[in-house]
Amino acid sequence: MTASLTRHQPFVSFWLARIATTVALQMQAVAVSWQMYDLTGNPLDLGLVGLTQFIPAALFVLVAGHLADRHDRRLIVRTCQFVAGVAVATLAAGTAGHWLSRNAILAIVFVIGSARAFEATTMQTLLPAIVPLPMLARATAASSTATQLAVIAGPAVGGLIYAVNPILVYALCCALYLSASVLMSLIRIERAPATREPISFAVLFAGFKFIRHNPIILGAITLDLFAVVLGGATALLPVFARDVFNAGPSALGMLRASPGAGALIMALVMTRWPPRRHVGRTMFGAVAVFGAAILVFSQSRSLELSMAVLCVLGAADMVSVVIRMTIVQLETPDATRGRVSAVNSLFVQTSNQLGEFRAGLMASWFGAIPTVVIGGIGTLLVVAIGRKVFSELYRVDTFEPVRG
Image (cartoon, rainbow, N blue to C red):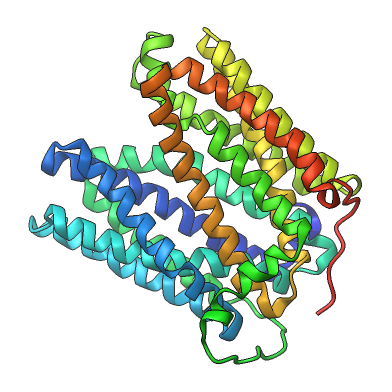
């Protein structure tokens, strides 16, 4: 965070709250997956844990966006964090009492996933109401820094503590969720009362309608969606670690951490020096670098080189994410910001899931390396085609807020 952001107390509270919740989420994910596998020994149940978190996101994300446009966004986030804290406390109690079963874990994970669907959508809408608009790009980058710090540190810390006692992991997660809820209560927002439109399909799907008629937002979301769907290689990292590099789980951990490390470095850089000119071209360039990095990774036979390339990949992805998030927030009037952010969240989550499925399916047909090559080429083709289809996005020069 730059000095100006550090002195901005509402943003500091927001930033700390985001770190707390994301670290808790990452630690909880490690603990739940290990515990589930210990209980059942069935890898399919690990997939069910992910599916159980995806279902509420798909079911509730549009309702979450509608609520974010109608009600106090801080209250929604605080409530979700409190619910998640109680749910994790239930995991701790069940572990201590030895009554936690497979179905009980899935039920509790569903509750946490439901709370997460509302919290993640609403959190995206808070920044424009917390910081002045000229600071939004830097604030978005700094907020992304919080996420990347958590993505790198959370699993490692969770794994270490789980080795001591799984109850301690859940207890710490509970404390982090509740602390985040308290931090959110310290934020003061000046905003006009929201228009209380009666709920209807038209209101719920207003985010889709707005995006469809805004070529800049549509282009930013579509470019990111297809790049991740075609270029995602995370699901195949275990294959590369074992079969290409002849290494073990520690190598897999380093490979998975590398994109996060690159993203963190770039987020810190963009916090200090956000893009000010040629924003659209910069986004297309970042996605092109993302695709090129995938191609280099597919041909690498060195673990160290592959880690470095994945760092570059993560850094390029962070540039794209910061620009996309800033454009979505600035191009959207506050009255519909929650619903548009909900659609954005839905596409982001869907792209990650579809990208992993695509990679696994194609790898079963062609092998891991050809699949990654195809993904890299596909990403570069998306950039070339997107340059023509979404020319308005390409021509965006500076971040300019809309009125309303």
